[in-house]
Image (tube, rainbow over all chains, first blue to last red; front, side, top):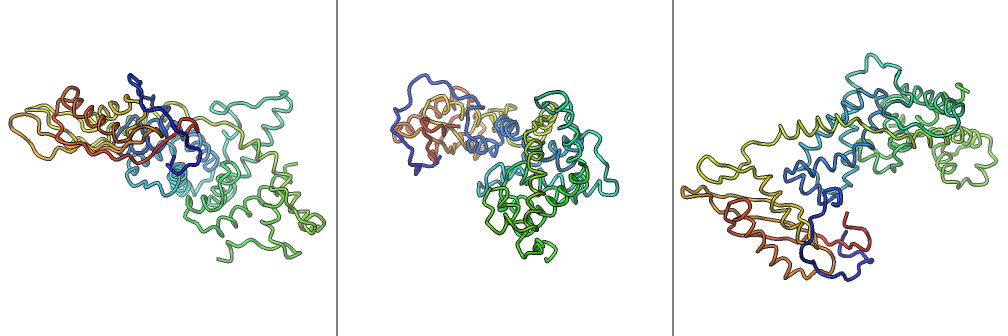
Length: 205
Length: 186
């Protein structure tokens, strides 16, 4: 919140006997500043706020829950070690996405010789089940599982762009910043991913 | 870098543009009637609902992930970051900084961001005085001059009472303002 925000209104000064705000009430910039000073609790709160988005990316990019959890864990430890280098030029979420994406790329390189078809890609223990009739739910699950398998067969760079765009809703510029690829490259990878997935889903039906 | 480019459709249109237009609901007359563009739209429509459902699925990591991260982070804390309290007595610098931030947070209308404590020299007689540099964010409308004077007073007093180290000076930098009315406090 900058002082130039037009929505400002006058507010009374500090009152006596105020309790300190709980960490969960603190704004992100304050938590980042404290984490940069070495405050573990503030870092833990940041990790708590971002972990769902990061595991989503890691799981969809890597296809395996155990790999995704390892990537998330390593990414958060990386984030702690590097947080002093975060300058606020990009959003903190962008910075975190970049770290987890780098981790995922490293895992994909390591796993390259054997690209497993994920057995655990159906909604399961860590997924909150959808609603609707059991028949429709089973059909949706089967369709989603087919999409997950098709996604797993894409080249890693295409998969990463597709996940960041379609599942996280990020723009080309932000994806370019996260992946280090040009916006033209991001656009091309995303399009190839989309057409390949559409092709696979056509065959599935 | 030709491989990074999107191949044009047989009608000459950029296939990625047609997809984006279908997504945004901004297809033009040509795109609505051309068979090549219609085929690209059919691909978009086929995936659309399914992708929305995949995006809506909630994933949560098990609590053990964060627990292990915090364990590793605590183990990673640099042991030399200690303030000398006296002979054979030290206090972790981050702990002392957290205590001073808490003092500021408790005042209302202010939140501490950075807090750095520097102990410049050692003393034989007792803990060497420290210098505190603090950045804070303030609620819009507080009297910054009087409130920063009070912060200085409270921090100096907390130094003596809470952390047991005399504070030689406090630099305060108000780097941001927030307004509760627009929910910017978080």
